[in-house]
Image 1: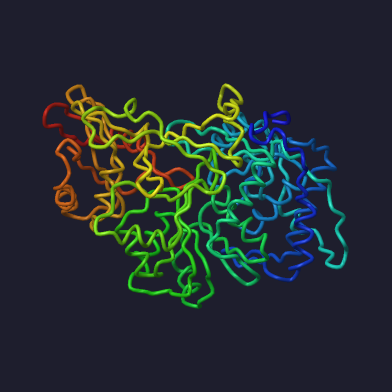
Image 2 (image 1 turned 90 degrees about the horizontal axis):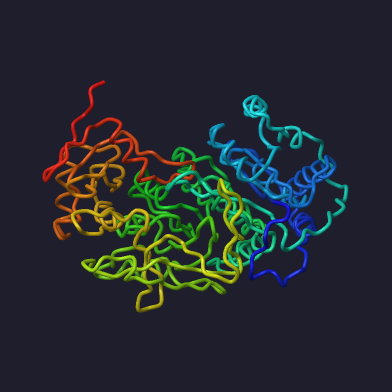
Length: 530
């Protein structure tokens, strides 16, 4: 980790990054302003953020931390997660943020990849971590130390631009998660690019609600917001009883709401109107036309779409609120997810559509390739660190095309393409049509292996009501027969990873764990007896 290969685009940059000076200056400017509030109503001012972050950094340095050494954090969405993230990077360590919902097996897998031994966590998680041989550092001990508001904080040394700084983990929807390594420089560049593409500049008193795990997208927006002296509100998941009063009191200026979150809010508060919200930040999953219309009815044309990946964080592309509204106001919205134009410095190209698409496909989409100064250095898997090709293109695994306006439109994942009866079918295209189904919470389209068909397309619904299959058939009337599901299954809940993403492979396994497939020209599923 300490000697990680730097990002190729940053090899000639040697300017250190003064994280400590930056936070010190924020505290001087906005000392008593609120930096963060969490779902338990714990509050953190900029002065407190500065003092706790520096206290953690000095603690790590005093205990012999070496530059680039990996330090993990295992914390819920809370004010502790905020100062802990700042403190680890001030110390010059490689931050390994772990989702609070990770099991011990998942934590051990991450430790195998990122080679960390110390985990900053809460007392309640300590026994299981100690039993697995980890060293723990209690967040409570840092947070409970007395604060000295009138004592100046001596800044720590800047950190090296090309030194390893952060490891994120992929969603694991196609296998075990991989580690994604960033340098300080790539992390800093990504934060500057995100700030430069915000639809408005936050200022003291301006709030944003963050409900997804802090380890990914929520932290990126948190850093951008806090650099301007504004306030973040951290909730651990979507709790409508807590969200509704915030919206009713006009105290929210922005919300980070991926489609799954936006769907819950617009369903639970249907009929409400919140014109004071200035922006709904969304991404990570396709936004359907039906969901956009629900969001527009509730907030107005305020939805901003971005494209980001663990390998290259937001923003890769940006579709601003007015552009998003214009796109979804077309008489016929094209299939796929429009994610906008490349952000400054980001290059996008589509590779070899013919090599990826069968000749009977209706449109030849290709794999989306990208490169950018804020991209990660490379991936870490069970075989070790694998750097990206110097100045090369990153293969995203996403299918898509560039439309006539120069916007990137994503149409699915290469790994998810279903081969059935001699055709290649993109399940995302089917899910977009089924998103309008009003008789279930969510539908996942996946496949089962078949000797007769190659793969059988199935639709699996979460929380389905009577007649949901018939509504699916009605919604798919205009789609080619080979693209329509041959089997329908209802389940209580679809399997999701800690980031809230659904794994199609996990859904297929879940179906086969409770059903037997009777193969043939008219396949059937027979429930297994208990």
